[in-house]
Length: 182
Image 1 (tube, rainbow, N blue to C red):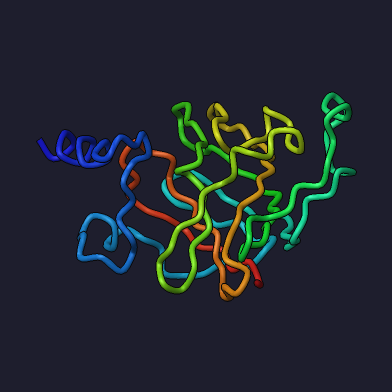
Image 2 (cartoon, rainbow, N blue to C red):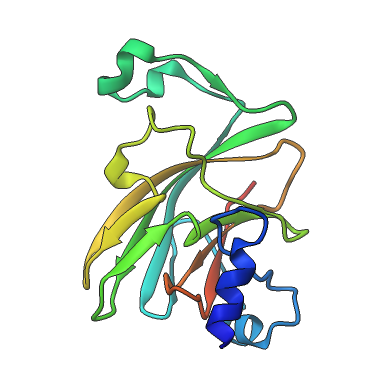
């Protein structure tokens, strides 16, 4: 019954996005299994058999046309962040050490600020990211490590950003945090 309630709550308001319970909430399921350590860029952060690693982070106001993939060069153009926002470009890796296939989606990695605001990977940057590296949807087999590449829009005046990665379960039971140095 609990799973039905959570799934239905995520569908309210004509959204297909699952509802995430912020770590500061009173949900005992989420807070009891959330890793308390904050990892650094380059460190491996493990939760529930999934290893997350941030390889590099870059902040920019404009994604330059020069970042466009070769197959999209005909429509290459600079892509500025929305007014009051900035882009955060992250290259990451995820490893599945479980015995079951997993799927990395936009709910598996996201940026969070100190107020608990959550920023998902942009779906408007497909001309800059190979589809097999976009953390919108990547299949991950047991023992497999994949690289991912994502652009996130965050408020320009936000500081102390972290990348949150979870255990890639349908109803995540834990998460790790990586300090982005921004």
